[in-house]
Image (cartoon, rainbow, N blue to C red):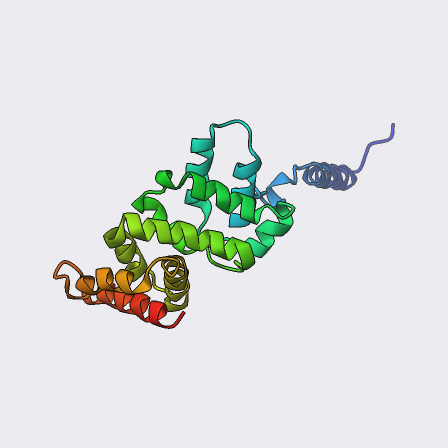
Length: 203
């Protein structure tokens, strides 16, 4: 009878084990080597956010205006005009109509919304800023003094001066002059008043 060689049997056993291990490794899951996926966050521009609110129909006009005011900071009105099919003036007219809803918490957002205003839109913005200044001079002066961007501050001051220019300018300046010595204002705030008087002198 044929007797298998022990060495031969041992070699076959080793080959079987090696083959089995290789097969298991090939079938091992590979998910651990796949890169983790991350959620994609869509960051809308201020123009997109404001227009989305403006055209929305699921809230009252008062809520719409209040929410729009909170989103104005950094808006590019040229971009907004493209997105809205030339609704910049209509949007600013809406804000003017509901200007009683504009509170000091909205001042910064509104005053940082002067990019690419022109023509009738710039005049409508000036009406909003000018009316706010007349109603709440101290609050507006404080908000302007807190702006870090000098060019932006001057842009708003020029808008206010433009609106006040429709009044008796000499009387407006008389009403402003006491603010320059107002002990309740700091130097930055007094500088805002001085800049406004200068803008009235040089329309």
